[in-house]
Length: 184
Image (cartoon, rainbow, N blue to C red; front, side, top):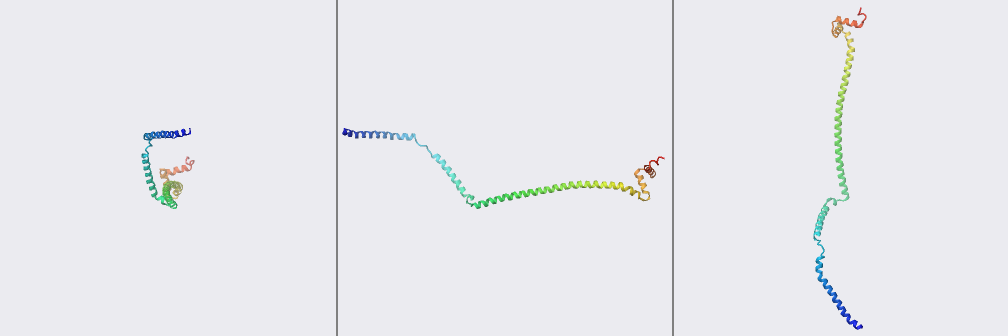
């Protein structure tokens, strides 16, 4: 039995081999159809777009590398920032100075206008004072001066003021001076 088993073993192994080869042959024959149906997607357009993007990035990087700011040291950056800041401050100070000068000029103009208005008001005040003093002195000093006039000019002046002749003016003055004596 061991011999029968031994003889059938190679035949069985050959049959197993033949079945395996047959399966492999069918698989190899089906391979082109399977490859056609299960083909990997074509990435070449995507790779083209990626390549163009990489080229653009490369150009941008080259331009950035050429920029003078990348070649400067930190100290040089600090000096450039300080210079720009001082320029801005200088400009602001100049504008502020101009605004201050404009404000001073306008203040001076307003002071002149106010001064002119004050001088007009002062002029009116002093004119009023002068007229008042003139009237006071005129009415107060006039009778004294007229009394001291020679040649009877005082009575002539009284007659002119009263619009009468000297006699009637004198009578009117006496009646006014002593009303009781003028009735009798």
